[in-house]
Length: 328
Ligand code: ATP
Image (cartoon, helix red, strand yellow):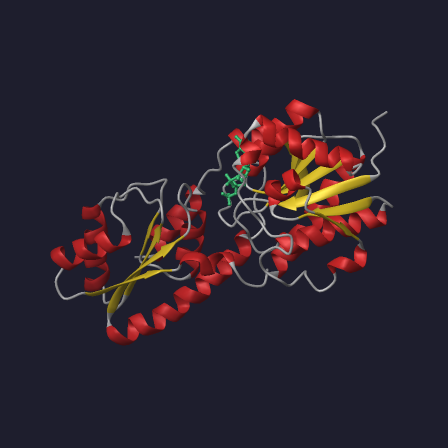
Protein backbone atom coordinates (compact mmCIF):
# COMPACT_ATOMS: atom_id res chain seq x y z
CA UNK A 1 0.00 0.00 0.00
CA UNK A 2 1.41 3.44 -0.89
CA UNK A 3 1.81 5.92 1.98
CA UNK A 4 -1.34 7.98 2.34
CA UNK A 5 -1.04 11.41 0.76
CA UNK A 6 -2.45 14.18 2.94
CA UNK A 7 -0.83 17.24 1.44
CA UNK A 8 0.38 18.14 -2.06
CA UNK A 9 2.33 21.08 -3.45
CA UNK A 10 2.11 22.63 -6.90
CA UNK A 11 4.56 24.94 -8.71
CA UNK A 12 5.09 26.48 -12.13
CA UNK A 13 8.61 26.49 -13.58
CA UNK A 14 10.52 27.58 -16.71
CA UNK A 15 8.81 29.76 -19.32
CA UNK A 16 5.21 30.63 -18.52
CA UNK A 17 2.37 29.66 -20.83
CA UNK A 18 -1.36 30.41 -21.04
CA UNK A 19 -3.30 27.71 -19.21
CA UNK A 20 -0.90 27.41 -16.26
CA UNK A 21 -3.41 29.20 -14.01
CA UNK A 22 -6.19 26.88 -15.14
CA UNK A 23 -3.92 23.93 -14.25
CA UNK A 24 -3.12 25.38 -10.79
CA UNK A 25 -6.86 25.82 -10.21
CA UNK A 26 -7.51 22.25 -11.25
CA UNK A 27 -4.78 20.84 -8.98
CA UNK A 28 -6.05 22.86 -6.01
CA UNK A 29 -9.71 21.93 -6.56
CA UNK A 30 -8.95 18.24 -7.17
CA UNK A 31 -7.08 18.20 -3.87
CA UNK A 32 -10.08 19.84 -2.17
CA UNK A 33 -12.40 17.28 -3.77
CA UNK A 34 -10.33 14.42 -2.31
CA UNK A 35 -9.87 16.12 1.08
CA UNK A 36 -6.17 16.61 0.54
CA UNK A 37 -4.44 19.83 1.60
CA UNK A 38 -2.77 21.86 -1.13
CA UNK A 39 0.11 24.30 -1.03
CA UNK A 40 1.13 26.67 -3.83
CA UNK A 41 4.87 27.22 -4.24
CA UNK A 42 5.89 30.67 -5.53
CA UNK A 43 8.65 31.14 -8.18
CA UNK A 44 9.18 27.49 -9.11
CA UNK A 45 12.18 25.66 -7.64
CA UNK A 46 13.53 28.94 -6.30
CA UNK A 47 10.52 29.23 -3.97
CA UNK A 48 10.74 25.54 -3.13
CA UNK A 49 14.28 26.04 -1.81
CA UNK A 50 13.22 29.12 0.17
CA UNK A 51 9.96 27.62 1.46
CA UNK A 52 7.91 30.34 -0.23
CA UNK A 53 4.63 28.47 0.22
CA UNK A 54 0.98 29.44 0.45
CA UNK A 55 -1.86 27.25 1.64
CA UNK A 56 -4.53 27.11 -1.08
CA UNK A 57 -8.15 26.06 -0.98
CA UNK A 58 -10.89 25.78 -3.59
CA UNK A 59 -11.90 29.43 -3.16
CA UNK A 60 -8.35 30.78 -3.39
CA UNK A 61 -8.22 29.94 -7.11
CA UNK A 62 -11.43 31.69 -8.10
CA UNK A 63 -11.31 34.00 -11.10
CA UNK A 64 -8.02 32.71 -12.55
CA UNK A 65 -9.11 30.18 -15.21
CA UNK A 66 -9.24 32.95 -17.82
CA UNK A 67 -5.96 34.63 -16.86
CA UNK A 68 -2.69 34.24 -18.78
CA UNK A 69 0.66 33.83 -17.02
CA UNK A 70 0.84 32.15 -13.63
CA UNK A 71 -0.35 33.50 -10.28
CA UNK A 72 2.38 31.42 -8.59
CA UNK A 73 5.03 33.16 -10.74
CA UNK A 74 7.66 31.19 -12.58
CA UNK A 75 11.44 31.23 -12.32
CA UNK A 76 14.60 29.50 -13.39
CA UNK A 77 16.67 28.29 -10.45
CA UNK A 78 20.41 27.73 -10.70
CA UNK A 79 20.52 26.57 -7.07
CA UNK A 80 18.13 23.68 -7.77
CA UNK A 81 20.70 22.35 -10.24
CA UNK A 82 22.97 21.68 -7.24
CA UNK A 83 22.62 18.82 -4.75
CA UNK A 84 22.75 21.34 -1.87
CA UNK A 85 19.88 23.33 -3.38
CA UNK A 86 17.75 20.23 -3.84
CA UNK A 87 18.55 19.12 -0.27
CA UNK A 88 17.22 22.47 1.02
CA UNK A 89 14.09 22.06 -1.09
CA UNK A 90 13.54 18.55 0.27
CA UNK A 91 13.90 19.78 3.84
CA UNK A 92 11.28 22.51 3.24
CA UNK A 93 8.84 19.93 1.90
CA UNK A 94 9.43 17.62 4.88
CA UNK A 95 9.15 20.52 7.37
CA UNK A 96 5.77 21.40 5.86
CA UNK A 97 4.51 17.78 5.86
CA UNK A 98 4.11 17.76 2.09
CA UNK A 99 3.79 14.30 0.51
CA UNK A 100 3.97 14.99 -3.24
CA UNK A 101 4.73 17.67 -5.82
CA UNK A 102 3.03 18.64 -9.09
CA UNK A 103 5.41 20.45 -11.47
CA UNK A 104 3.88 22.48 -14.29
CA UNK A 105 6.62 23.30 -16.81
CA UNK A 106 8.79 22.12 -19.68
CA UNK A 107 11.40 19.38 -20.10
CA UNK A 108 14.01 21.23 -18.01
CA UNK A 109 11.59 21.41 -15.10
CA UNK A 110 10.83 17.69 -15.52
CA UNK A 111 14.54 16.86 -15.53
CA UNK A 112 14.89 18.68 -12.21
CA UNK A 113 11.85 16.83 -10.81
CA UNK A 114 13.20 13.45 -11.86
CA UNK A 115 16.64 14.06 -10.37
CA UNK A 116 14.93 15.24 -7.18
CA UNK A 117 12.86 12.05 -7.02
CA UNK A 118 15.89 9.84 -7.67
CA UNK A 119 17.79 11.51 -4.82
CA UNK A 120 15.09 11.73 -2.16
CA UNK A 121 12.34 9.34 -3.31
CA UNK A 122 9.91 12.26 -3.21
CA UNK A 123 6.75 11.67 -5.33
CA UNK A 124 6.56 14.02 -8.36
CA UNK A 125 4.14 14.43 -11.26
CA UNK A 126 4.55 16.61 -14.37
CA UNK A 127 2.06 18.73 -16.31
CA UNK A 128 3.49 19.92 -19.66
CA UNK A 129 3.17 23.71 -19.80
CA UNK A 130 4.95 25.37 -22.71
CA UNK A 131 3.74 27.05 -25.88
CA UNK A 132 6.27 25.23 -28.09
CA UNK A 133 4.50 21.83 -28.03
CA UNK A 134 7.92 20.19 -27.90
CA UNK A 135 7.26 17.55 -25.25
CA UNK A 136 6.96 13.87 -26.05
CA UNK A 137 3.91 12.08 -24.62
CA UNK A 138 1.20 14.62 -25.39
CA UNK A 139 -0.31 15.85 -28.64
CA UNK A 140 -0.76 19.28 -27.05
CA UNK A 141 1.18 21.08 -24.31
CA UNK A 142 -0.62 23.71 -22.24
CA UNK A 143 -0.55 27.04 -24.00
CA UNK A 144 0.17 25.75 -27.50
CA UNK A 145 -3.40 26.22 -28.74
CA UNK A 146 -3.65 29.72 -27.29
CA UNK A 147 -0.30 30.69 -28.83
CA UNK A 148 -1.50 29.44 -32.23
CA UNK A 149 -4.60 31.64 -32.01
CA UNK A 150 -2.53 34.64 -30.93
CA UNK A 151 -0.12 34.19 -33.83
CA UNK A 152 -2.86 33.67 -36.42
CA UNK A 153 -4.57 36.83 -35.22
CA UNK A 154 -1.28 38.73 -35.68
CA UNK A 155 -0.72 37.24 -39.15
CA UNK A 156 -4.23 38.28 -40.21
CA UNK A 157 -3.51 41.84 -39.16
CA UNK A 158 -0.15 41.92 -40.90
CA UNK A 159 -1.80 40.45 -44.01
CA UNK A 160 -4.13 43.47 -44.15
CA UNK A 161 -1.22 45.88 -44.37
CA UNK A 162 0.86 43.57 -46.61
CA UNK A 163 -1.86 43.38 -49.24
CA UNK A 164 -2.58 47.11 -49.12
CA UNK A 165 1.06 47.89 -50.04
CA UNK A 166 2.11 44.84 -52.12
CA UNK A 167 4.63 43.90 -49.48
CA UNK A 168 6.56 40.80 -48.57
CA UNK A 169 6.56 40.17 -44.81
CA UNK A 170 8.87 37.87 -42.89
CA UNK A 171 7.18 37.05 -39.58
CA UNK A 172 9.25 35.37 -36.88
CA UNK A 173 7.42 33.08 -34.48
CA UNK A 174 8.67 31.09 -31.46
CA UNK A 175 10.23 27.65 -31.99
CA UNK A 176 13.98 27.29 -31.50
CA UNK A 177 14.04 23.53 -31.97
CA UNK A 178 10.60 22.68 -33.32
CA UNK A 179 8.39 24.16 -36.01
CA UNK A 180 4.93 23.29 -34.63
CA UNK A 181 3.88 26.91 -34.14
CA UNK A 182 5.29 28.00 -37.52
CA UNK A 183 3.76 25.15 -39.49
CA UNK A 184 0.29 25.36 -38.00
CA UNK A 185 0.01 29.14 -38.04
CA UNK A 186 1.57 29.31 -41.50
CA UNK A 187 -1.18 27.10 -42.89
CA UNK A 188 -3.92 28.88 -40.93
CA UNK A 189 -2.62 32.33 -41.90
CA UNK A 190 -2.23 31.44 -45.58
CA UNK A 191 1.56 31.92 -45.63
CA UNK A 192 3.38 31.54 -48.94
CA UNK A 193 6.34 29.84 -47.27
CA UNK A 194 7.07 28.38 -43.83
CA UNK A 195 10.63 27.99 -42.57
CA UNK A 196 11.07 25.48 -39.74
CA UNK A 197 14.02 23.95 -37.85
CA UNK A 198 13.19 20.44 -39.09
CA UNK A 199 13.61 21.27 -42.80
CA UNK A 200 16.18 23.16 -44.80
CA UNK A 201 14.31 24.87 -47.59
CA UNK A 202 17.45 26.62 -48.86
CA UNK A 203 17.70 30.25 -49.88
CA UNK A 204 17.50 29.59 -53.61
CA UNK A 205 14.31 27.61 -53.25
CA UNK A 206 12.83 30.35 -51.11
CA UNK A 207 13.59 32.98 -53.74
CA UNK A 208 12.27 30.70 -56.55
CA UNK A 209 9.12 30.08 -54.61
CA UNK A 210 8.52 33.79 -53.95
CA UNK A 211 9.14 34.56 -57.63
CA UNK A 212 6.66 31.84 -58.62
CA UNK A 213 4.09 33.32 -56.22
CA UNK A 214 4.46 36.69 -57.85
CA UNK A 215 4.20 35.45 -61.44
CA UNK A 216 1.11 33.46 -60.45
CA UNK A 217 -0.58 36.76 -59.61
CA UNK A 218 0.01 37.21 -55.89
CA UNK A 219 0.58 40.81 -54.91
CA UNK A 220 1.66 40.27 -51.32
CA UNK A 221 3.45 37.46 -49.55
CA UNK A 222 3.91 36.25 -46.02
CA UNK A 223 6.75 33.98 -44.94
CA UNK A 224 6.57 32.48 -41.45
CA UNK A 225 9.98 31.86 -39.93
CA UNK A 226 10.51 29.75 -36.79
CA UNK A 227 13.28 31.18 -34.57
CA UNK A 228 15.46 28.14 -35.15
CA UNK A 229 14.95 27.69 -38.90
CA UNK A 230 17.70 25.84 -40.72
CA UNK A 231 18.50 28.38 -43.43
CA UNK A 232 21.07 29.84 -41.06
CA UNK A 233 20.15 33.50 -41.50
CA UNK A 234 18.19 35.47 -38.97
CA UNK A 235 15.05 37.21 -40.10
CA UNK A 236 16.83 40.55 -40.75
CA UNK A 237 19.51 38.81 -42.82
CA UNK A 238 16.75 37.09 -44.78
CA UNK A 239 15.26 40.48 -45.57
CA UNK A 240 18.68 41.74 -46.72
CA UNK A 241 19.15 38.69 -48.92
CA UNK A 242 15.78 39.15 -50.61
CA UNK A 243 16.39 42.89 -50.98
CA UNK A 244 19.63 42.10 -52.80
CA UNK A 245 18.41 39.18 -54.88
CA UNK A 246 14.84 40.01 -55.84
CA UNK A 247 13.67 43.10 -57.59
CA UNK A 248 10.58 45.11 -56.90
CA UNK A 249 9.78 43.72 -53.49
CA UNK A 250 9.10 45.96 -50.51
CA UNK A 251 10.27 43.65 -47.74
CA UNK A 252 9.31 44.08 -44.08
CA UNK A 253 10.09 42.13 -40.95
CA UNK A 254 7.98 41.47 -37.88
CA UNK A 255 9.22 39.59 -34.81
CA UNK A 256 6.23 38.56 -32.72
CA UNK A 257 8.26 37.77 -29.60
CA UNK A 258 6.81 37.48 -26.11
CA UNK A 259 3.26 38.46 -27.04
CA UNK A 260 2.97 34.79 -28.12
CA UNK A 261 3.25 33.65 -24.51
CA UNK A 262 0.57 35.94 -23.15
CA UNK A 263 -3.17 36.35 -23.27
CA UNK A 264 -6.24 34.64 -21.97
CA UNK A 265 -6.08 30.86 -22.55
CA UNK A 266 -8.29 29.40 -25.29
CA UNK A 267 -11.23 27.15 -24.45
CA UNK A 268 -9.11 24.19 -25.54
CA UNK A 269 -6.27 25.07 -23.15
CA UNK A 270 -8.67 25.65 -20.23
CA UNK A 271 -10.28 22.25 -20.72
CA UNK A 272 -6.90 20.57 -21.22
CA UNK A 273 -5.49 22.21 -18.07
CA UNK A 274 -8.53 21.13 -16.05
CA UNK A 275 -8.18 17.53 -17.26
CA UNK A 276 -4.42 17.44 -16.65
CA UNK A 277 -4.73 18.79 -13.12
CA UNK A 278 -7.30 16.13 -12.17
CA UNK A 279 -5.20 13.35 -13.68
CA UNK A 280 -1.96 14.56 -12.05
CA UNK A 281 -3.43 14.72 -8.55
CA UNK A 282 -5.38 11.46 -8.82
CA UNK A 283 -2.29 9.64 -10.14
CA UNK A 284 -0.25 10.83 -7.14
CA UNK A 285 -3.08 9.75 -4.81
CA UNK A 286 -2.88 6.27 -6.37
CA UNK A 287 0.71 6.13 -5.14
CA UNK A 288 2.33 6.58 -8.55
CA UNK A 289 5.27 8.89 -9.19
CA UNK A 290 7.60 10.12 -12.00
CA UNK A 291 4.95 10.47 -14.69
CA UNK A 292 3.85 13.27 -16.96
CA UNK A 293 0.17 13.54 -17.82
CA UNK A 294 -0.57 14.10 -21.49
CA UNK A 295 -3.25 14.08 -24.14
CA UNK A 296 -3.04 11.16 -26.55
CA UNK A 297 -5.93 10.41 -28.95
CA UNK A 298 -8.12 12.67 -26.78
CA UNK A 299 -7.50 10.60 -23.63
CA UNK A 300 -5.48 11.51 -20.55
CA UNK A 301 -2.45 9.22 -20.55
CA UNK A 302 0.70 8.85 -18.44
CA UNK A 303 4.23 8.90 -19.84
CA UNK A 304 7.23 8.15 -17.58
CA UNK A 305 9.10 11.42 -17.00
CA UNK A 306 12.37 10.05 -18.40
CA UNK A 307 10.63 9.18 -21.68
CA UNK A 308 8.90 12.56 -21.82
CA UNK A 309 12.28 14.25 -21.37
CA UNK A 310 14.27 12.16 -23.85
CA UNK A 311 11.59 11.60 -26.49
CA UNK A 312 11.40 13.91 -29.48
CA UNK A 313 8.22 15.28 -30.99
CA UNK A 314 7.98 14.95 -34.75
CA UNK A 315 6.70 17.45 -37.24
CA UNK A 316 3.52 16.31 -38.98
CA UNK A 317 4.59 15.49 -42.54
CA UNK A 318 1.03 15.65 -43.77
CA UNK A 319 0.88 19.30 -42.64
CA UNK A 320 4.08 20.01 -44.58
CA UNK A 321 2.47 18.60 -47.74
CA UNK A 322 -0.75 20.53 -47.12
CA UNK A 323 1.23 23.75 -46.75
CA UNK A 324 3.07 23.05 -50.04
CA UNK A 325 -0.20 22.47 -51.89
CA UNK A 326 -1.90 25.52 -50.34
CA UNK A 327 0.88 27.88 -51.36
CA UNK A 328 0.57 27.07 -55.08
P1 ATP B 1 10.76 26.02 -21.14
O1 ATP B 1 10.28 24.94 -22.08
O2 ATP B 1 9.86 27.17 -21.09
O3 ATP B 1 12.21 26.39 -21.33
P2 ATP B 1 11.66 24.39 -18.99
O4 ATP B 1 10.97 23.73 -17.86
O5 ATP B 1 12.33 23.49 -19.98
O6 ATP B 1 10.63 25.38 -19.67
P3 ATP B 1 14.26 25.29 -17.98
O7 ATP B 1 14.76 26.66 -17.78
O8 ATP B 1 15.00 24.37 -18.88
O9 ATP B 1 12.72 25.45 -18.41
O10 ATP B 1 14.16 24.55 -16.55
C1 ATP B 1 13.48 25.17 -15.46
C2 ATP B 1 14.21 24.90 -14.17
O11 ATP B 1 14.28 23.47 -13.95
C3 ATP B 1 15.67 25.35 -14.14
O12 ATP B 1 15.81 26.71 -13.85
C4 ATP B 1 16.23 24.48 -13.02
O13 ATP B 1 15.91 25.02 -11.76
C5 ATP B 1 15.45 23.17 -13.21
N1 ATP B 1 16.32 22.24 -13.96
C6 ATP B 1 16.48 22.15 -15.29
N2 ATP B 1 17.40 21.21 -15.61
C7 ATP B 1 17.84 20.70 -14.44
C8 ATP B 1 18.80 19.72 -14.07
N3 ATP B 1 19.51 19.06 -14.98
N4 ATP B 1 18.98 19.46 -12.75
C9 ATP B 1 18.27 20.12 -11.81
N5 ATP B 1 17.36 21.07 -12.08
C10 ATP B 1 17.14 21.36 -13.37
